[in-house]
Amino acid sequence: MGAGAGGLSLRGARLSPEERANSSKSRAIDRALSKDHTDDLNRFKILLLGTAESGKSTIFRQMRVLHLDGYAKEDALEYLSIIHSNCMEALTQLVEACSAFGILHDITVQEDVDRFEGFKKKLRDPEGLVIPVVIGRCMDRVWQSSSMQMCYETRRFRFALLDSAKYFMDNIVRLTEDNYVPTIQDIVHCRISTTGINEIAFNHKKMDFKMVDVGGQRSERRKWIHCFDNVDMILFIVSMSDYDQLDPEDHKYNRMKQSYEIFKTIVHCDLFRHASIVLFLNKYDVFVEKLKTSPLRRSFKSYDGDNSEESARDFIKKLFRRCITDRHKFFVFETTATDTGNIDLVFGSAVAHIVNENLRSAGLHE
Image (tube, rainbow, N blue to C red):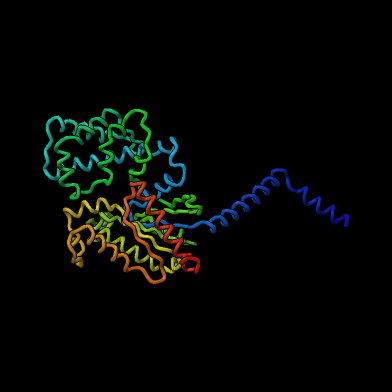
């Protein structure tokens, strides 16, 4: 017995203080991982999917605004260069459109256009872009000119234009002031491509949620499979305004029809047989405006309704609803991702519908 005890003591003595500390750290990490796994199982997991530029990541940012602490100053400043890049992209698209449509500027406006183009050529580090105050004022004069306003008002749906172009150009003076710090609305309106997998955990109505956002570009979709475990809800985002647009990654395909095919594949995936399906028909405000000049029938030959907002909306709803099987709980909402109040309302409604349906299925709700 004494020898055995001495043997145990000897084996313990072989560990150096550093090794004992590392062993303790390893056990602590194992416990933390086990706790994280348990926490994950207890959270309502939402997988946020959609094609590029559908507004998916804007909705992800809205969750941070609505259910966490938003963006501290240091976090907000990380968006400054992105916002300034969006401003540059928007005005570049507008200037190129004026040229393509043969819209001429007054001499003073053309001088400002040339100044803007000169600034672009001198850019060395687009990722760290900061627009100087003087160039911001120059961009504002170009935007406010009668020629540019005519191009925007009469032709904005006939060329590629950043969704938030008007918001950024209307605010360009404020956005390029010295000591500018992006506001919540500036951050919500900015466009940045999602790469990789982003997660956010939050509490809503006494429920714990985990939302997972993955990139919508074709090259990013292969990563979706890594997020498919234990999903309670698929939140799929479709850009309503894409009904007459070609897929930028393959011009043979209509963008909305591409979204439809991806949605159908996701819905029919056996991994999601128990998941609720929520469809956000996003950019609804742009869709309504577009219908005035671009009839739905031009892009969807099977559509035989009139060009009213209600008829066109219902056609698109029915198109996506066809993919749904009887096993799924399915809910659809029209959304405007940049409208925080709208997203708060529809997200709350979606969750409430799903909870009520789950209670009804369990026989706990009338």
